[in-house]
Length: 118
Image (cartoon, rainbow, N blue to C red):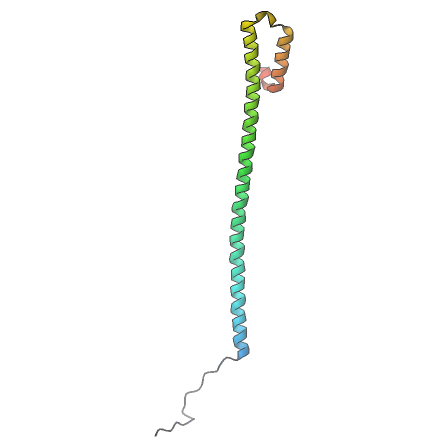
């Protein structure tokens, strides 16, 4: 039978104590937690940035829609003034007097101040 001599046996590797194992596990858990927070913060920032761009885009579209409506409303008023004066001049020329002409001029200058210079 073979006898093993304790002097010739391979040295045992040192084992980690329970406290060292717990510290190592806590360190890994903390690192994973920090990585999760960093990734979550990055993703949240990107989503918020996209949301803000969408809100700005909607605000720009709404402002453009309102400005277009205002421009069209102004054009309709000016067109009505021009047509009414032209119609009066064609069909009722005797009613085209100074009062109507000054009314036309004042309304036109209210709707289109730069048109007065033309």
